[in-house]
Image 1 (cartoon, rainbow, N blue to C red):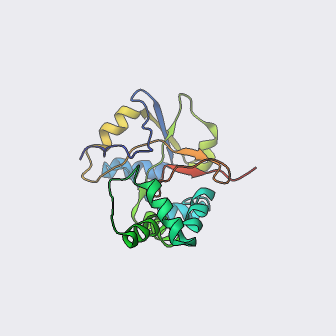
Image 2: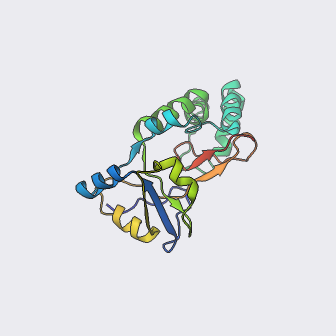
Image 3: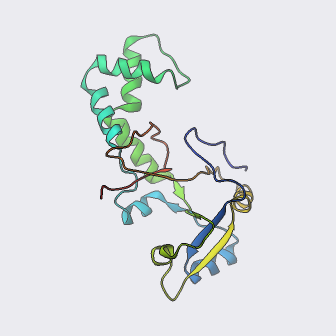
Length: 194
C-alpha cells in the first residue's frame, strides 16, 4: 500500500535527506530475520515518555471554552467550518459537533484512541550521526546505527499492506507556542519549559 497522503500538518522529509535508526543488535537480527520493521504502540512509548500525547495549552483552553457555553461552542463551530468539510444547519447539531470534536471529552477520547491505535517507528533526520541517540536508543556495548535516505525508507514502507502516515515531528513548547488543531496527529512533540 503506498504511503498515505500527507496529513494537512505533516511535512515529509525530502527524498535525499539522510535518516538514522538506532537499535540494539538483537533488534537488528530480528528485523533481518523477519524482513520487517517494528512499529511500537504509542501507549508503550508514552509509558516511558511522560510528554508523549501531551495536550497543548491551546487545546486545554479551547476545550474549556467550547464546554463553557452553547454560544462558545457555536463560535468555535463557525471558525472550524472554514477548515472542515462539513456544515450543519441545526443549532443543536452545531453545538454537538463543536463539543464532539473540540471539547474536553473529545480531547480525552482522541488521546486514548491515539495511544491505543497508533504505532510509530522513529528515525532521526540529519547528515551526521548524532552521538546522543546512542544513549537513548541503543546500549553502549550493544547497538547499531542504520543509515539510509528518506526515499529508500519511504519506498520500503510503501510495500506494507498497512496504511502508513509519513512525516517529520515538530518539537514545540506547548505552554507558549501557537499550536494548530490537529488532535489526530502524533507529529507534534512537547518540549517542557526549561
